[in-house]
Image (cartoon, rainbow, N blue to C red; front, side):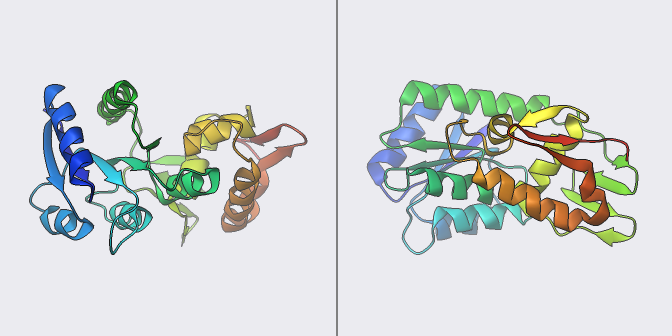
Amino acid sequence: MARIAVVDDDQDWGELFLRILSECGYFGSYYPTAGKFLDHLSADKPDLLLLDMQLPGMHGREIIRILRSNPATVKMIIIAVSGHDISSPQVIKAFEAGADEYLPKPVDIPLLKVRVEALLRRGTDGKNLLPSEIKIGDLKIYPERRAASIGKRALSLTNMEFELLMAFVKQPNRVLTRGIILETVWKTSADTTTRTVDKHVETLRKELGDFGKRIETVIGVGYIFRSKA
């Protein structure tokens, strides 16, 4: 049985989420503050976190960054919810921090159920699909540790830069439109601004050094990653 944690300072929403998840067969825990959730994390690590972004004392994005920086929680599925931060820039920032999904309040309950099931299934199905090491030329990627290196130099990649690199590596020699990249990496629709894609590709190229030249721009369309130099 999947374990799900709900962190929401609005008790009505928290109890509603908990009841819905229990009815779906999940084991749920409710925390009214970020502090209480983090205090109990070592003893009760959930498979999925339903996180309100507007919490007193600590914004949801900071909680996501904490979880993504910890090897023990880096793979935790995170669904962000918010009744305030629903503009495109705020949503993109949440995905950049490492959220897997973003739902506005009032939450569409049938959609929530479907997304929880799909994300948990994806997490289960994908556990053993990736190799422990991916090697392309001088580039080495370690999916389990979410780490990468070129030669003897360890790369310093943000969560979204790592996801972007993986998106290219999984589909080499294929043109990826900015819309496809947004949907694959940021889990958002193509009508959201694509400038964030260009910005992250630029920083990824810089971090990759000469290897970054393999990520070629297809003018007016998107990018293509060449598996061979």
